[in-house]
Length: 209
Image (cartoon, rainbow, N blue to C red; front, side):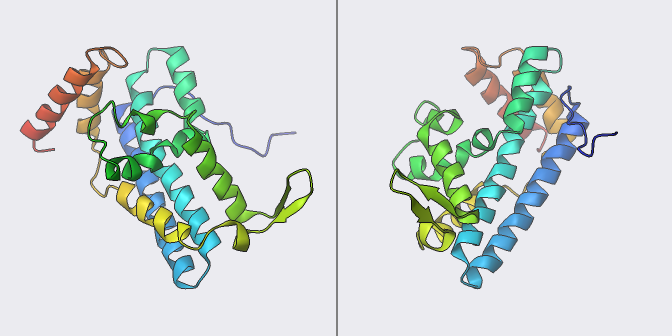
């Protein structure tokens, strides 16, 4: 009997395929943000919060796809990147960026918490998403949870604002990703990566991207 679940791709991506995947992720994030806004307008904050978190997860795919396209010849890196692509916590890691910026973070080292999938903020957001969707039972004394009570009223507009902030409207073109591979592939996760990023940005500017 054939499986009803389609097999998930785990191989390399060309710049063209990566550009398509990024565009689709951003398009779907915009749809989820619009749906979250409707929920908030109709006084459904738990649903609004859950949809905003799903939008953040879709936007988190952008950076992971950019990692995948860098590692077309490295089977282990590809495996790890695709695993992160399908991990909720790996995709929500950047939601903490606005908070870090508001606290004065303005260097790559100060912002590195927004790349660590094992930090508490990724688990917390994933838990809030579950609480926004489902009833559950917690603690040794069996305390029931339901979305209307579990999600604080101010949280929904706050996390929706974060989703909007992370939703960059500009297109990531195939040419941009070709340059990304050219400049970053030899330096990824090495001490020279910072300089490579700066050179990449300068080239984007020179080409009007």
